[in-house]
Image (cartoon, rainbow, N blue to C red; front, side):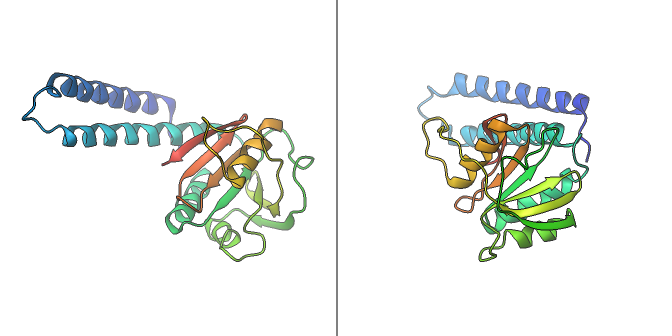
Length: 199
């Protein structure tokens, strides 16, 4: 789906207004001892999560769509990996070639498909731990070793996949999609920063 900027702006404005309304409601009711506001916090959290998912999907599509037509397939693969708690690291090359920053990958040379990506990252597969390089609509290689960043994210310790994703994007303009095998969380790295797509 090609999610346009006008639709995104309309939808995010609606979410911001709904979130503001929910905050106003909480602000006027939290002091009432007999009023349990737990449900109100659940509603607020749901609105914030939906707005977050909308925004992260929009930006990921915005960063990827000029460089690959396979955005939907990459998203589907990431969701399937997340649901199964299978870790994944997908490098989407943009204008700067990443070849000089990654090494030891196994050549693949196949059209992007979610089935192939899920197979590559299947636990026990010899190349499941490394990064898979995607150039335009082709899986170029898998099992690549990436440079690892030294930075921490908001004081939190990052796993190797996440540090590798950030590390590569500190040197190139690639977008790197990461799926955590521990939590199933989907993130992407861009310009040396990590953004959560699916908490």
